[in-house]
Picture 1: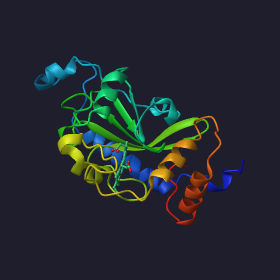
Picture 2: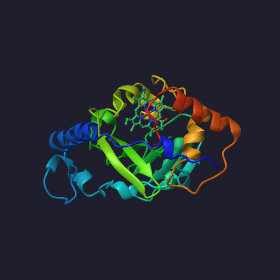
Picture 3: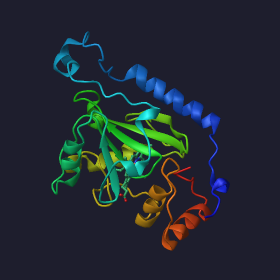
Picture 4: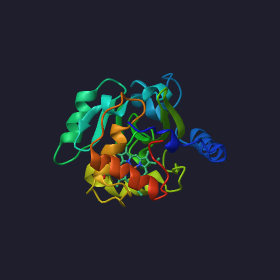
Length: 220
Ligand code: HEC
């Protein structure tokens, strides 16, 4: 097996500061999730629902989630079956609270309780750094969250909202990402949080092409 240390991505602390500031802004200006059950009377019915809590420890080996087509799903409230049911529905649907979606190890969407943030259908967007020790949240937020590399998560995912609850996949109307299906597979299969597995040649080639393209390495 080849060493992958050469592709290790270092944290850009300047950017990290910017992302952290964005996340902080989101925390201050966004609707506040109620964890206590007290407070906002207009969301009284929401307040009794369990809060969806997301921390670094929420994320682990992407392949331990449930595979659906080319992506992986889970549910941080334990309701995996309901999440899988929507993901597998041929007509789409609204993902239940707690749903966790990932197609590469370094990005995730997590569904909060109804009413938490209506413009994003209650999805929170999250960017991660992952290594063998686990995941670290680099940025999180709602409409405002930009990837470290620049583009805005919501701007791309919002066009899919009608039937697909902002889930893009390959053909739900979102602007495409520059990662082919085999590249996505290769990134999933080299998640450093997972046990090492042998990569087929086409996935090796896809990773080499990605590195050569100068694109920011999404899984490192
Ligand atoms: C340039 C547009 C674009 C941007 C920016 C973008 N995405 Fe996506 N995202 C997509 C597309 C297209 C797919 C589907 C890829 C596929 O399956 O081929 C996708 C897939 C996903 C998936 C798997 C579920 C799904 O919708 O198919 C998650 C989770 C996700 N993105 C999260 C994020 C997060 C978090 C951010 C920001 C940190 C982000 N994305 C930024 C376009 C984008």
